[in-house]
Image (cartoon, rainbow, N blue to C red; front, side):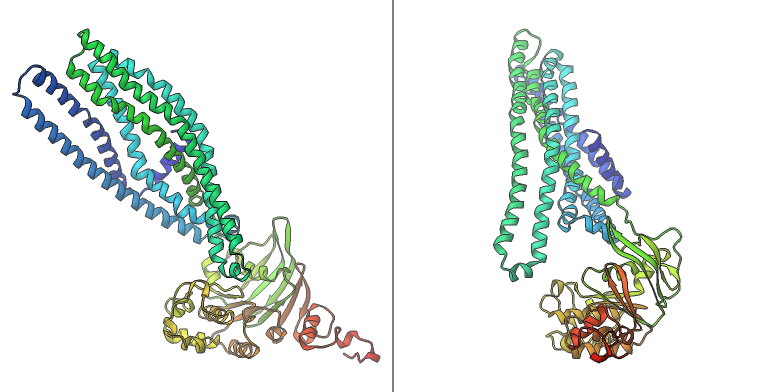
Length: 594
C-alpha cells in the first residue's frame, strides 16, 4: 500500500469506536495465528511420509492423523470467530460512520448542496460506505493472511532447504514489478469509474424526483437515452478496468505456476542427490500454494484497495467538511424572539453575480412586510438571508437588534416559520407533516393550525383524516392543498417571524381572503414577511418593498404606491383593468388628479 491508502486505512481505524478496537485487533491476530497454523499439517504430513510410509512403521500413524484433525478443527473454529468479529466491528463502524455523515449533511449550508449533486451524495452514503465496510471485514485480514502466509512459509522453506527456497524466491521481484506497474495504471481508472457511478445515480435520482415533468412533456424516451448514456459510461469504465486486470493476470498466473514447476524439477533433483527427503519435498509441494496464492491474490487486493481508496476519499470529504455558516464563537443565547427585522445596507453576491445591492428597511414586531418584484429580482434571497441560509456580502441584518451572525442558528431558525411556493412534504401522515417543527403538538393543536390555513376541511374528508399518509412531495394532493398544509406547518411553530413566499399562489381568491383573515388574528404575536405577485395578498401590509435588479425600487404602503408610476402600480392596474399610469401621472385634461 502507498501513502494515500495507508492514510485512509489509519483514518478508518481511527474513527472506529474504542469498544471495538480490541476485538478487531484480536481478530487480525487470529488471522495471523491461523496463517501460521497452515504450516503444521504439512509438517505432520512430512513426518507421516518419512516415519510411517517410507520407514514402513505404522506405530505413529494414529497419533499423527489425530493431531492433523485436531489442528484442522481448531483452525476452522478460530477462523469462524475471526470472521464473526470482523463482521461485527465493521458493521458497527459503518453504522456509526453513516450516522456521523448524515449528521454532517444536516448542518451543511446551502452552498454545499449547491456544489454537490444529490446522486453523488447518495453514492457516498451507500456504495462508498460499503467499500469502507468491505475493507474492515475482508481486505485487512486478507492482507494479514497474505503477508504472514508468505513470510512464514518462506521462513519454513529456508529451514528445510535454503537452495530450493532461493530458486523459488527468484520469481518474487518480477511479480513485485508487475504489481507496481498495474497499481500505478489502475488508480485513475477507479477514480473515473467512481465519477461515472455518481453521474448514473444522479441521472436516476433526478428522473425519479422529476417524474411529473417527464410525463407532462412526454420525455420518457429522452430520459431513457440519457440514463442509458450514463449507464453505458459506467459499464465501459468497469470493462476498462477488467481488461487492464486481465492483461496483467496471465503474467501473475504464469509466475505462480512456475513455482510449482521449479519445486517439482529441483525437488526431484535434490532427492536424487540426497539433499532432500520425500517427506521434505512434500512440504514444498503441499505449501507452494502458500507462496503462489498471495501472488495470485495480490492483483485482486490491489483492485479492492484502489476502490477502497477512491471511495474513502469521497467519504472523508464529507466527514471533514465544515459548513461555511455555523454558530460563531461570539454567538449569544437570546431571549424569546420578538420579531423585529432590520436590513442595513445589505448586499449579497453569488460568485460574481450581484443578487442584492444596498438594501435597507426596518419592520417592528407584529408588522407585515410585503415584497414584490419581477422574477429573479432577489426577493427570495431577502428571506434566505434572514434565516442565515447565506451570509451577507456587505452590511448587516438585525433581528431584535442583534446581528443574525451572532444568533445561534438553532434559536434563529426556530423563531422563523417558512412556507414557500415550492412545497416539500415528507412521506408521513398529515399530522406528522403539520407537527414537523414541534413534535409535542396535540392533535387539537394540529387541527387548529390546519383550520387557520384552511386545510382542515379537505384533510377531514380524507379516508383516514390526519392519519392519512401523504406520498413523497405531497403526491395525491393539489398544489393548493400542499401549500395550505405547508402554511399550517409554518404556523404550528408559533414563529415570531412568519415568512410566506408565494404561499397562496395556488389557492382561489376566496380561500386567500379566509387565510388572510386568520393571519390577522393569530393567537400569538407574529411579524409577517410576504412575497407575492397578487395585489390582494400585499395591500394590507404596513410596508411594501418593490425590488428590481437587486435594489429597492419603491417602498411605501398600498395607498402611497398606487399614486406613483412604477412596478407596483403597473401590477395593480393590470390586475384591476385600470389605465397604465396612476391618476397623479396623467394630465388634468385626461382626468389626472391626486
